[in-house]
Length: 140
Image (tube, rainbow, N blue to C red; front, side, top):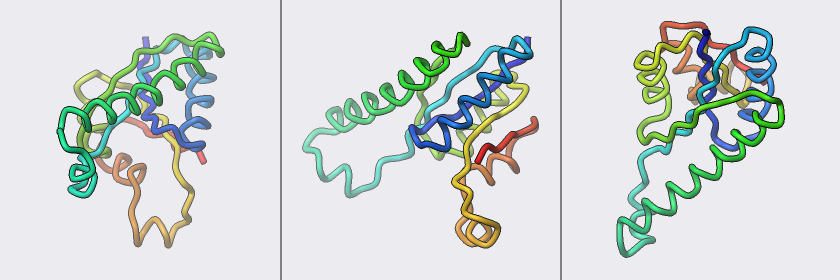
């Protein structure tokens, strides 16, 4: 059975990628792995909370809501999925996850900033394309 990884962040672009992955999963009888990556907290965010466990709970709750929305969307498409929440730099975390879980394809959204914007600013999607060993489908 093929394994499709869909990194989700709650954005409209990731929801479009999710719908695309659902269609592909139904056609190829694939299993879908949803991955939400919480980037490292900025120092300013840490100062906003007196206790670090409070910050971790807020971040875990937010990640859980993103994953639940993605799971619900796939369930409405009659596609089963497995949820994963990890912390780290998003592109590298996605690439490590893909390698560790024998992922066959990554399907993810892109903001579609255009060639110049992507070249100057970079993007998670662009870095993932260069870091993973499997096909990556970018959905605008």
